[in-house]
Amino acid sequence: MEQNKKHTMKTIQFFTEQTNFTVKNKTLIREWLAQIIRKHKKTIGEINVIFCSDEYLLKLNEQYLGHDTFTDIITFDFVEDKKISGDIFISADRMKENAKLFHVEQTAEMHRLIAHGILHLLGYKDDTQKNKKQMTEQEEIALSWWN
Image (tube, rainbow, N blue to C red):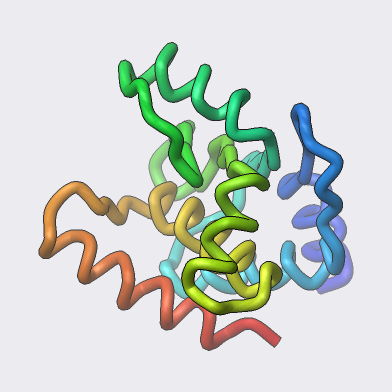
């Protein structure tokens, strides 16, 4: 089990681009994300969670998705079979605004966004009302496993 934790530490990484946001409790978050992935009967590949500025994420949104709008998260899927890999870009600016808008702690909003990105890597979509409902349900389940 100890070897498994070391592997999780190496394969789920946190980075920042154009923001001074700092993630606390990285080890606990890694263990939580590993739990989400395992409960979906998948294995952990290389996962990068990158917190960035609105402007940085806007450029990615324009460049890769052709959308000229601000967003809170973009997930790039590098999943191979059952091995979950990808880059999850989260706007620290949107995250802070969402927390105020939804009257939740910033940490709770961060967890929701990270779970959302992991769920995208697990194959969940949010492109229709039905899919959004399922995504929200899965977010709630994942968040219930925190702590």
